[in-house]
Amino acid sequence: MKKGRFGKYGGQYVNENLIPVLIELEEAFERYYPTPEFQEEFKGLLRDYGGRPTPLYYAKNFSKLVKCKVYLKREDLLCGGSHKLNNALGQALLAKKMGKSRLITETAAGQHGLATVMAGNICGLETEIFMGVKDMERQASNVKRMKLLGAKVTPVKSGTGVLKDTVSDTLREWTTCSRTTYYLMGSTVGPHPFPEIVATFQSVIGMEIKEQILEKEGRLPDAILACGSGGSNALGAFRSFIDNKGIRLYFVEGGGESLSADNSAAAFQLGKPGILQGALMQVLQDEHGQIKPSKTRAAGLNYPGRGPEISYLCEIGRVKACYAFDEEVFEAVKVMCRTEGLIPALETAHVIAYVLNHKEEFDKDEVIVLNYSGRGDKDLETITRYFYGS
Ligand SMILES: *Cc1c(COP(=O)(O)O)cnc(C)c1O
Image 1: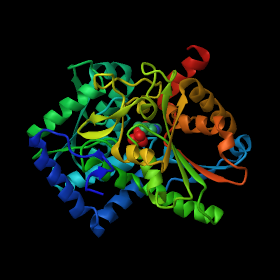
Image 2: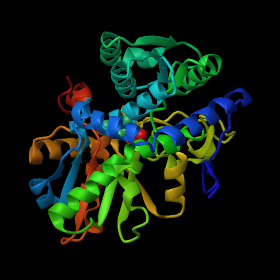
Image 3: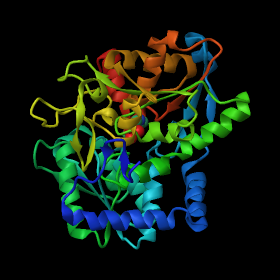
């Protein structure tokens, strides 16, 4: 396959000023990542700061409900409460090796912004987070956290004040200051080499799953399921198993209220190939090819595009593209609370909902792994308002 392409997806659809910057990044990644020094520093931080390896937990009570044997890969226990730190730490370390002094990124829900300022502080880098004005209002508590940690949070007023406008502003900013500044991409999206870099840093999840399941079960799992938008936690969990065709892989996106284009984030069901954020991928769009905003209650899944690699894997049928509706997702939160005493993130609850509503797809002697991408503390208000109205 051509470098930076996954089938027809991927590429570098950017302003020509950005090409040399992307080349510098690709060369730096190829040069530093394989070195023993980088590996040692990265793994050391993941272990001692992040808390890796995260446990692979046999959810016995939940398993009884769905009949097969269910393990949870506990990324909610990673420092920060989700898988996002794996990627932020890796890229911040790369930025430091490249001699940069500042990180910039954009964030919608604030989770990626938080992981970025954490990683920036560890590596001694300044952090500036661009955020749509509307998103800043909606995620006020994460804005406070980022500021407390020392990030500069810059409101973006252009367009409609949400993620896609912010991305354009951040890329524009990067072309003017790339000598000192590193753009820390939050998911497996964006122009090459970002999707490859992010998937590589997240692939620690699947490597651990493989080791842990062999130890616990003496064999590989029958299926692995992950939720996602850009695809970073899913690819992180899947990558070690993609060549192993006997293992079924499921990607669960945000169905929103219903499968109508105005009420959903299900880009694999409703989208088409199109260019977003510098790459060709599956994107929600209107009949004129304009990007359509996505809709789901899970902030981390509220993105209209699917990264190039997950777009390709779903297109060729290696990964099954699935979705869960908001209503099912809230019910799944309740089930996980009652069976295992865990409050999942709304994103993570999509996977739980899928399994609960498709029990017939999993045989009783099967072993399956759910990538438990994050904890639900950030969603507490949304969840309690849904159930109790306050
Ligand atoms: C951000 C986020 C996601 C979705 O992002 P991907 O890059 O697709 O993994 C999923 N779960 C949680 C808990 C998140 O914070």
